[in-house]
Picture 1 (spheres, rainbow, N blue to C red):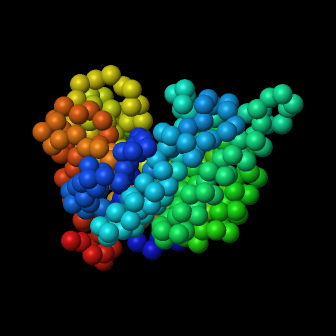
Picture 2 (tube, helix red, strand yellow; picture 1 turned 90 degrees about the vertical axis):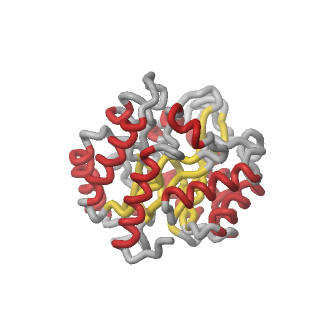
Length: 321
């Protein structure tokens, strides 16, 4: 099963907080992304914060989460640039714990935080933005991102997917974490399988062999909802480690992208990427050489991505400006 078109995408806006979208700086950022990378899709990503990995309330209406109006502005801006949109609300922990560690006892226990309470709050958050995705005609909606410890809660996820379908009519996916593609058992309830492709540059073939079995089992389209690498010495071998110490190194990022694109181009079931990531506030092109983060703006990887995306879009018979 194939998607309607190849996803030559980039994730936009993540780490943006209330007040940093819907301004000229953010508009310029999205325009630069579209112009310099030849994308045809974007994942508009933002987060709401729960206090800790064991908290059960997600106050998505409160700062620092961007406002509904800011989210709607970003969607309108993307569409004005000719991009298709995946809306991607994410939950993070305010204390810095990675969301993959959000976890509770498998059985509800009195006087302890409960899965039932957390999913009630999380569902309210997701359904709120599913309505906005429907109102703004987003082509895709992502119901969760890299929530490893929650993946085993099959019944709760199936119920949430069913509730989302009552109010959202576009494509629905879930962004599982790296190495977790074969641990999710509810892919059949979704339209698309997607995961985070932070695999070592020398390990892509082995990981794609593993993922291909999952795609064949479920017969669903697949793409990498996230994939990227810091421009930092040593990062191509461990691209998911954003804390890795090392000097800025653009060739390290190029090495990762060339390895990933070369491996994935041989697998026609890999139907695209939403690369990680492109912030709402860009550094200057003059600062690109010293920036060691994931963003490719002004770096050598920018041209690598643009060339690959233009080639793939032409091969798919898609319009390329």
